[in-house]
Length: 221
Image (cartoon, rainbow, N blue to C red; front, side, top):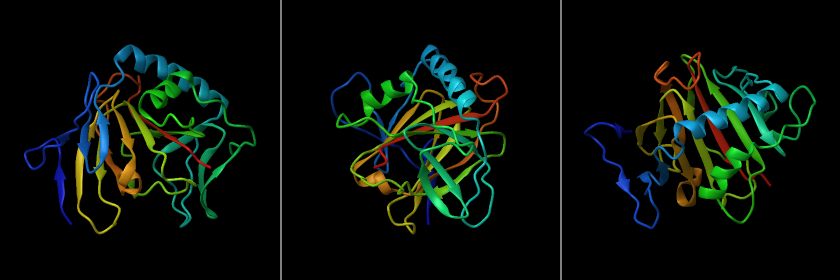
């Protein structure tokens, strides 16, 4: 298995061809819109996410194998992503029993700009990475229809994204994501293995106490 850092000399991401003011970088089929959100847009989104957290406090799920995840999470929308000993799945309610809050308007605007016009997402998963948190390689496959993309928004500290292929045995390549970057995982890359190896804690001043927020928008059913 190979592992090449896209920010170094071993890999140069391709630039997608097409219309638009900013063309995304392509990494293993992931379209990376660097700096899609400017600082004022990030701050507005962060304020709306604080309201989501007040309505649906973050928690640390347990994997089916019984290991507690290093990231804290919550959700907004019709469904929230959830994990426990019973498995990975979507649930219509927060662990407290309350309904998930609506997806914030600023987040919906990103989907409508870069996602799929056929329908709006059912879930916005909100992951918070504190110092030392990471996300192992995984596929997003708990949804019913893989023809819809997953749209991912980065806020706060830099995160090292690792991307492989649809076969777990394929090699991986990596790229640092920065606050305001948006990644669209669609087409053949919709089921690619991916994860976040680490964050550069304190690299962004967006979150006063440091850390990274990652939002993923998904059509669930």
